[in-house]
Length: 348
Image 1: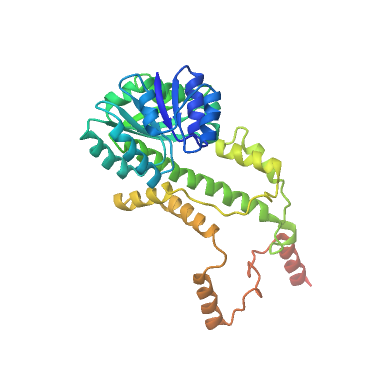
Image 2: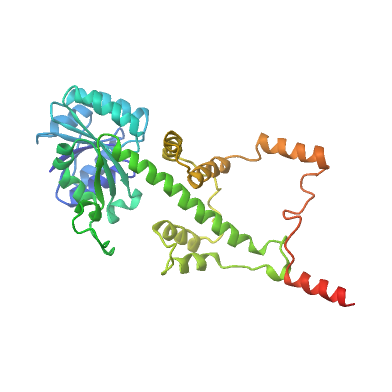
């Protein structure tokens, strides 16, 4: 099958390569000509403009996969691309666009009989090897037409045990992709997926932080442990109920550098976490963990905030508490050593 791919960054380039490895023919475009040339050497047809992409697509209906960051660049690209296409052609947005933007775009493009498919794509830089998990929204006829593309990009059944009771269910889910629903549904499911990802990552981060600080001077001496964090991460990968690919990545980083010195701890968010919380508010669904995980990312980007200065000032005002002159844990739980000392003192 022939397909155009616009945007050849970390994922767009590898999506093109995975498709070509499966026998599909890709016409590719990126604003960076060097990136286009690299894909051309891998077997793609490189185009210098969006118009050249469309001209090179000889199969009808034409399909163009847009793989760009969510926001203005995707909006502008689709605005420029759509007049070049005709009835029944398909635009696929494979990035992380806001699902309400998908609904609006699909309605607008439908006036010109152009079909719009939103595809939430998970897999990152490893997708070319592992395959991509895809959550797809849009009209059924367009999604069905693109099935060979999605099937080639998906991971397939692999070695994951099959879920009991799914014999009569849609087989595409087991292979790593689903038609989630109408326009916007694909990116909505991917949005919540990313919100959950924030929560899972934050849980790991907090757990490892607790482990690392078990040798704190604020603890009783006999309760301080110097723990081997890389070994703990590794053993949790083996048969533990909290094993996951995210843990695999964390274990690999810790094995390379147990102190993670090359990282500052500044954690960005790409928008999906915020949109997930907005959806939770609109639906009146409590989302305590996901919200806290998002706020933790905000906090990672700041030194001490003005709000924390206000807290410190109030504590000084009512109690004379001076910053930095108190233990981090002013009333630690009595340890065994303290218990023994107290008992001995009582006996004397």
